[in-house]
Length: 292
Ligand SMILES: NC(=O)c1ccc[n+]([C@@H]2O[C@H](COP(=O)([O-])OP(=O)(O)OC[C@H]3O[C@@H](n4cnc5c(N)ncnc54)[C@H](OP(=O)(O)O)[C@@H]3O)[C@@H](O)[C@H]2O)c1
Image (cartoon, rainbow, N blue to C red):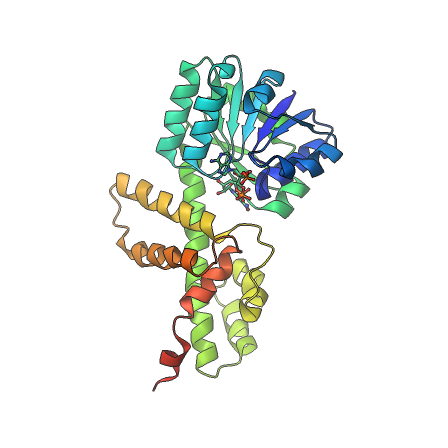
């Protein structure tokens, strides 16, 4: 199963590394070619153009930032090279974007499976991503030998669009839980409550989520460097969730403020940092907080 992987960023680079460690024959392409160098050292073959990579492999794995960049790669840069190829689309995009891509790939003689994941660089390197697939069941079965190298527990959820909807549902929880915890943490600190005493209460309650402790130290130190998942992508995913929720008629107005808050990340220089930099945004104005 020779594969070609497009987009060797944080997640794509780790997925490629994992596949190479499994002895997978792998071509890689990235817009900024330098990012492929560590993978070449592990045995990957680097393509200078997307079409060149697509000509070498029946399986095309995409891990680009978003829907528009994935669309441009597949439908403009590879385009006719999709004939006879199977696309495994792993980047997080909207369910509608995914369905449109599936249709356009089929029109070009290719096949399409969406396979978004929960988990980040460490899980990708360990092969313990939580992988959800959407697309024809027989195609999923054919892709399983590849997918199983990345996830011990891959699941097929249904048609194209279902896995992206599930992924957005999970990422909405990442955004909401991080936001909720961040506000509570700030309030207890500003009220003179010992953080550990608060955490003890929280940990022994039904409200506790492991992600709180996972991010606590970073938030207390204000250290959002070395991200596994950048703030800009969390904002993108919340915006995609909002669009999908609206399309299904949900009343999602409660999330509008959170999305607006995340939009401030760009000006604050937080976009490339770890998503728990949301904690810097909820800090608001310290002076105002000190007023009685
Ligand atoms: N990181 C995670 O923990 C995680 C987890 C689950 C899902 N995801 C999803 O996986 C996808 C990739 O995330 P990431 O964290 O790996 O992001 P990243 O580190 O920012 O990498 C983004 C990748 O997309 C490429 N790219 C962006 N715009 C492009 C364009 N217009 N044309 C061609 N290539 C373009 C980048 O190329 P350059 O190197 O040239 O910029 C890079 O390879 C996103 O959809 C994200 O939501 C990420």
